Length: 632
Image (tube, rainbow, N blue to C red; front, side, top):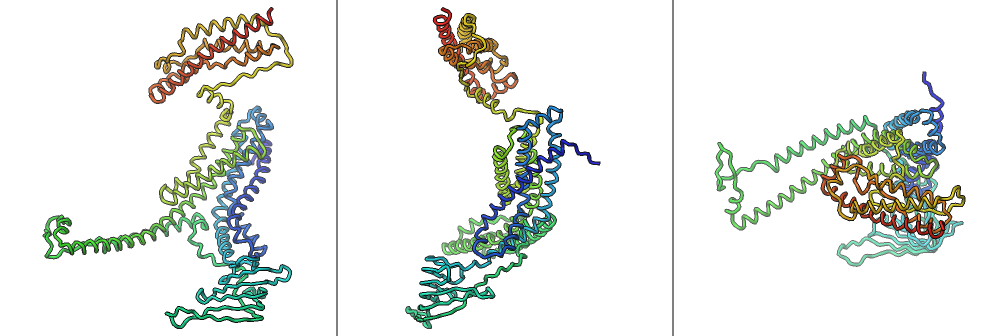
């Protein structure tokens, strides 16, 4: 019997509520993007509601697999971000429940959604894709509604260009019409001008009934004499004229059998059969081409008796074509070169045409193989997108639609760029088709494993302050002190003790600077064999921080301002790179890196020398201020 704990119900309920919303939002966005590509095929054609509903339903069915991974990623980010923001995740961990146990029910649900995605891709998707492409082709062939604009040439009626100067919207009367009729060809064009007219659709919606009033007709007539430069024409003046124009306004669904070669309308079994058939056909075509080339282009030529080379039938014969060519006369050389050039040109054209057949078959095979693997990779994306979103949400601890949406879009765009780019390269034949189709999973799946591991260990991988401190250490950047006067002071500073401590600090700084010669270059060997900290500088730093903490309770603005001049000391940046001596030795052996590190440590030594001088000067200024204005 399946035992579901209350924690699993709570986690699943939180995720499913968010997943339902994010899924329909993602599906809607992808449908709008798909609709924007084919909006020209839908607008202005008078389509009935059932046709539009069929278009949206089919497009939704084909876009469900691509919407699921993004919806899972976004929902997982928001769910665990909300848990972290509301301290629910902290409470679960405090109760001894690890993050992987909290993620377990949603991980199982993601696996189920992955199988659902595979079902849609392998069963529902191919059928919906074929019906959708058939519908799109039918929509392209559907004639638009006749809505002739004013003062613009209207060409949506095949074979006609119609210009209307003014149109009465209420009665449908067209004024000052100019009609170019090219239905019988440009050489038999007919031009009609009418003062007024009206255009109506017949009851069977197969023709347009054109009524024209008070106009003239100009028509070119075929000339019996081809060499004649004058083309006769006929001019007709009429008070009323009526004509029928072929115009099929009905929507007719085309036969979709021409789409059977497409790989995206087949399931995995049909794709495998198609690959086998295409491979057998390509091999047979290749063997036929090889046989034809070997019997025609590369057939052995028989030499006549007049040739200067004698053939020894018992031994291998080497034919010196250069000597044969040099023995020819000038006319024979020219004739030979012309024949050779003509033959090579013919062979090149013939092989180029044959290569198109094999290249097209090879491309079709690669496309089928890519789509076969795509059904698996897109389903697998549902799983590793969850293992990216859930730990990422637990790390950043931000819920809602702000930060999670931004991160989800960035990750999905990265996935889409890698997937589309690598797949395109693989289909072109420049990359292994399996590697190209799985490239996005190969790149992002380790990211999910890494984030899951780090979040389960409560790592500070996304602690911005940690990265700031690291880069400050690398580039020698330090924070500035910001000490202000306190509104409430618990105890007053001990100024006398502070002055004594500052005397000690000044003497230690002078002693350290004189002993270590910080301005000179450090010993290269000692830099990369030393892994201990500088306890003397560390002690000076601690003494300074103690004095600053004590004097920060002062009410004197000048003393507080002087405290801001004390620098933050790096206690080991001037000594070595790492606490690991073997890492230091390895870095020192690699000369380009070692020299750069050595120069950087030298720079830190120069900075430390300046800091020590700054500490001495600042300490003396504070001592003078205390002795002259406070201790008197």
